[in-house]
Figure 1 (cartoon, one colour):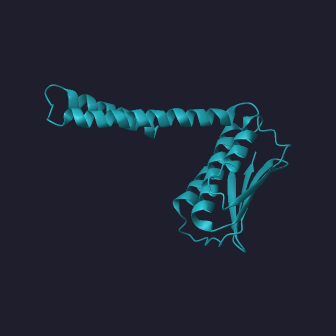
Figure 2 (cartoon, one colour):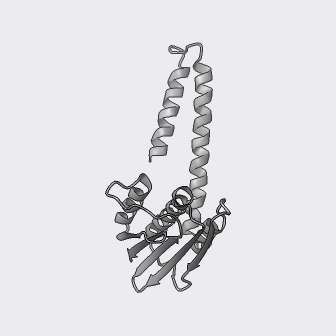
Figure 3 (cartoon, rainbow, N blue to C red):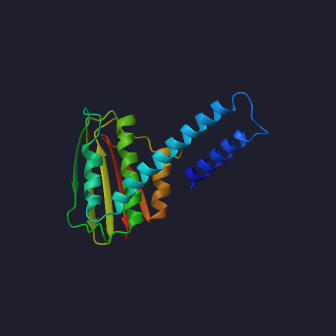
Length: 182
């Protein structure tokens, strides 16, 4: 929605810039720059759409999670993972899959940026009507304060939308336990 509003706003301002009654010496250059920005925004929307489409395709959720973990650019951190084969991802609501994926992206990014870890372990388990995402690293730990960063607040916000909660344990590294009730 925000991207849509942003693009519409840019196109409207470009149209305004090019109107014969408002043309200024730099109008064409500004309009050209704006059109390039709109093109990049549209490309981003297409890329996100393709990524999201894969999240909802039959049998691909497992693969997209595996790819996310296996294709980490920082080879100094060794990632390993265990995804419970008994989880029927096609019966898991799409909204839950979407938010779990985005939460995992955020947690992996936090490991890269803040943890100084050498190893990280990611587990996705199902326990009756609960799905658990457990992300553990051997880094420097995490100060769980009332003033969390944007990433942790985004995770908490996503979890509210899918009836989930977060537990953070920080002893000899950090362990994030995400639990979602199906």
